[in-house]
Length: 290
Image (cartoon, rainbow, N blue to C red; front, top):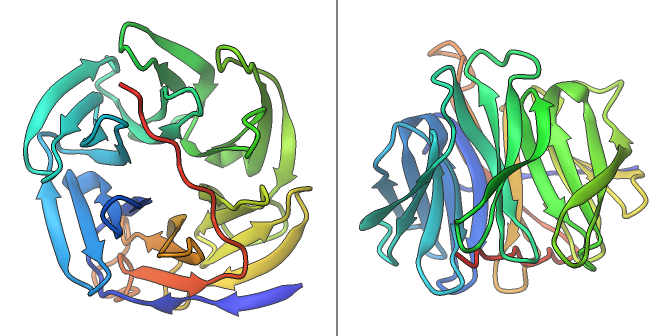
């Protein structure tokens, strides 16, 4: 078993950092300060910018194929221009005032999948939604989930990997190659006998999964067969939220953290971004076709 240690590259720039995404078009890292309703950008020189969105929640940012960005907010989507400061409204589809949207991603067909959760984390009160590229259809890909989190696709597009945090699993689904529908859910990785719960997740070009552990001060690296091969320690921070590959060769693993729920004097570096160089390049994330 290999053990590595990530290096802190920023101060505590977020309260609840989440959803890191490497923007290959501009060569910068984007992430969200989820409960502050802001997108944060960090360029190669370390310059930081905050971009408030028209919502109290910003839980996901991804590229649109036609240019600009799609951002998931508390109850739906907004679209941002290249400056990340000019917005137009998108569909709203979450009607439960006790819930909000959370983590998600774009599939190889160009649809956006975004999960939800109850604010109090109540069991079975969330769903994983699929929004088609033409925005004419919003359906439920996975019902009755609790805290919808990490989501990735295999390189060949035939499998989807998904985390509902309280299950302490990474599940895998078969993906319909024609329409992108999911079926045949089964456990792929059991995250047991270790501190923390699986949260966000990255995937590398060899279909290895890199799973952030909320409450675990670590990222676990699993190979394409689901075997734990490496533990990346994130020093001084317990609430590790998500990770994403980036950099010119896509070999830098960026890791986000949170101080949500912590005492004011606890873990002073919580909310910082960490990074580590890897030998395996990450897969490029899909863009939204809408």
